[in-house]
Image: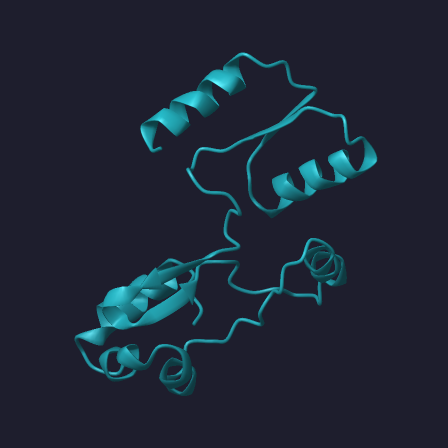
Amino acid sequence: GGSNDKKHIENNVTNTEWDVIIVGSGLSGLTAAYRLLQANPGLRVLIVDSLDGFGGRTKSIALPQYNAKVSVGGTFSLFEHHDTLNLAAEVGCSPEVPLPITAANLALFSPDLVGLVNTPLGLPLFFELMWKGAKV
């Protein structure tokens, strides 16, 4: 496990010829790979990213010290994004509707943050969460 797995992956990546290399493992990169493989299952597709994880800004992060989980995804959307929601359903994802950071939402989803955010000590945390694009 661990570093041996990473070394094995690195060796396989560098010793293989690829038909398509996609830079970026966010929603667009993953969608491109998915659609390419749908159209041609035999294609050798490599997705590379500067980060260890995948999904770009479509993920949530846990804040165990505050008993909270926040989304670091997009801050807002102007349209209903039917294509995105249809794709999510097609690949078995269940996207959730993000909620704004309000006392009521914090009480429901992040109870330990409620009292903290509404105090002077909580302001730095609140601004840090907002700067990171967090939604509860």
